[in-house]
Image 1 (tube, rainbow, N blue to C red):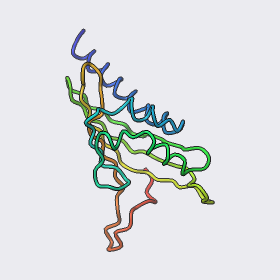
Image 2: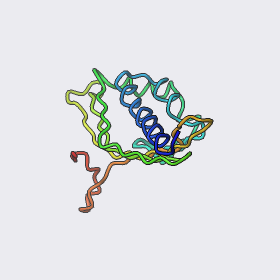
Image 3: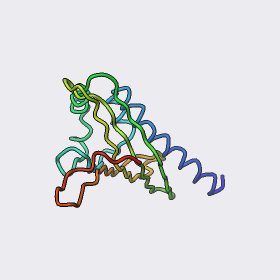
Length: 152
């Protein structure tokens, strides 16, 4: 197998792995979302506090199930403009992601675009996410409010 063929296969595997996130979010499948993607030593900088989530705490299925239970109706999740760069055993990817759903008891849908970057390692022949960083920009006009109205 040529190095170009391996690189294409690795990129396709990573795209599929990241694409699973949207499928699992829409299905509210916490188990699928957590176990299929993350290495045990994951470090994640996410939208929700605290500043850093790590391994066992992040991989707690019941915590994610409780979060899913806070929404009425469907959860829409989109991954857009995904770019993947893969080396032999290390890769990174970035995208713009959208989460849209209705919080329990709310009358309006919550719609948020945010930035996502993932770093992956090939561990025993399988690509796993070892670092994930999600962020939302904020206005630098002195208000320091999150820029929740941005769209690509």
